Image 1 (cartoon, one colour):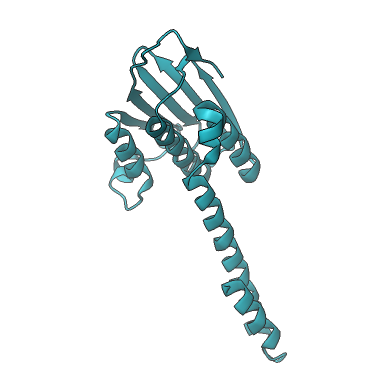
Image 2: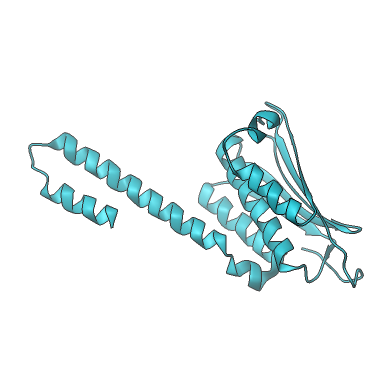
Length: 191
């Protein structure tokens, strides 16, 4: 609606006000950008793909789509995962991948990222890493952003943990670990 109203204002602006017309066009462009971002975010909030493709398929698909949108190279691999992970565990790990890649794309200043999802013994592990500029983890954890805090909280609710290994100019690795006891440990998925 805002974009439409700005279009009408632009059309009705006097021809003698070129600066006003330019500013209206800029605001309309920002409104369309915001609308697209909100729409993308709402689709990511509940991923039907997670439900239908399972965790491996949903993460693979997200890495591919996000990589194409952002012009990034995201290498995804998975191995030794138990079949039939609980929905809350799958959703939490999926959200950690999303948040990690969004943060990495925004801050790392590199175009290549590695995502690995795997099972070991009674745990599921997820790593997202890059060889970018890195950051001061202590400062980031005490900052105003909610991304790292929300990832930690999601994992804490599953009795898991999040660790961040990053140093300025030496890259970043986000590592999520969640306990999981499979009743049929012999059934493992590979991706």
